[in-house]
Amino acid sequence: MGEVNLNRLAIFVALVRAGSFTAAAEQLGLTKAMVSQHLARLERELGVALMVRSTRRMALTEAGAAFHADCVRILGDAEAAIARVGENRDTPRGTLRLTAPVNYGAMVVAPALASFLRACPEVHAELVLDDGISDLIGDRFDLAIRGGPLRDSGLRAVRLAGFRQLLVAAPCYLEARGRPRRPQDLAAHDAVLLSVLSSPARWTFTARSGAQVRVRLAPRAQADSAAAVHAMALAGAGVAVLPDFMVQADLASGRLDHLLPTQRLPEGSFHAVHAGLHAPAKVRAFIDHLRAGVAGAQA
Image (cartoon, rainbow, N blue to C red):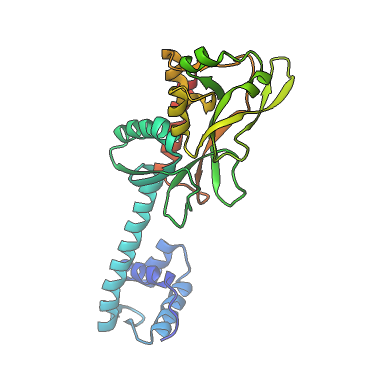
């Protein structure tokens, strides 16, 4: 048996349903001769007669009747599969597997995910917090939240929000060491550095006038986690540069002070990254939900 053209299965089923070549041709938008040719080629591909026909009537052979039943089932399964794909395209459902950096994931993504799940009862979620760069496809993630510059790749990225880097210190540290009044004063201060940054000790401060000053912080301690840097800064180990979303509550409560507030450090950003041109509804919906939540928090 040669290779079978599956499109002819639908023509065969339509022919049986219509009861005649003329009626089938009208329903399919084909000529009567084309319907006849498709049936003849299908029989040749299968190597078996499916119908016996005369000038007045046609009837299924025993093999044709069995094959027709199989074709109806196959086409029904295909239609159901297409319908399910359409539902996944339009309605958020299924398991959303996503990864995010540890601190941003815990402080921003997780609360947004909780409210998203309340709004989308047909979605389940699996959140993996990891400061490394996960293999989106190899690790079977639907979505990754990534900070910093993005690597050039075939992945699709949607910018979520920017964030400010803030120079902070605990009041107990400032009481003991004094408050820096200008960026150059930082040379005399201890710093707690985030070691995973490309240049954790070197920072550029920009004044309101646009004038820039590059300084090198004096490392007293280093850690590979922003949470650890945050904890040491709270305990008075030294000055630290931390993202605004991480220290907002501390600044409001007075546990940390914002140093050199008239100077700006380079801003960072987070992106939602996914594979493929057409993201499933669950991915698109969560990106929109997360962007709206971040925008509302920054307003």
